[in-house]
Length: 207
Image (tube, rainbow, N blue to C red; front, side, top):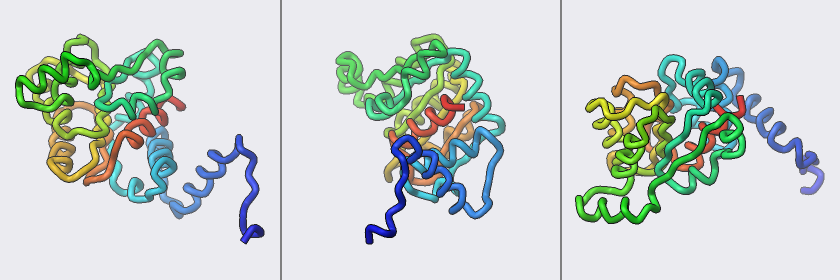
């Protein structure tokens, strides 16, 4: 079996992976920067379903690239996504990553109100009085609360990366956020996760 193993220098592994992904897409392509987002999601997950389920509102990816280059920050609902986003690159543009999930007051407020910490985190995002990129990779309740805050005029994200994963209200929350009137990148259906959110944000940062 060793003769079938392809030798690739460590610094070339990612580039070689992208070549394989592009080949296996069999000519299917997107305008940039959408194509880079699709390929990075596939690279992260080894799941070619992202070639079919990723939905972009008009110009959303380009808007995301522009915003991040201008120093817009990212608010995410998971520590895993926050860890995966290239904070060094983001900081070079003047932005930072916020995640409020571990804040003691967030947990306490969620218990008192009988809601999820993710929902409270979206309220913390609104309290920043910025127009951040919102990147949701775990909790559909974050997208639902975000939709409510947008409709109330309390926040206006420059872009929503809505990619919670799972079974309860996941599909419904994604479809809801796509009607919020805000630019979005959303993998329709049940798939997503913190790794996908980080992959999308990084694809925009690397443009």
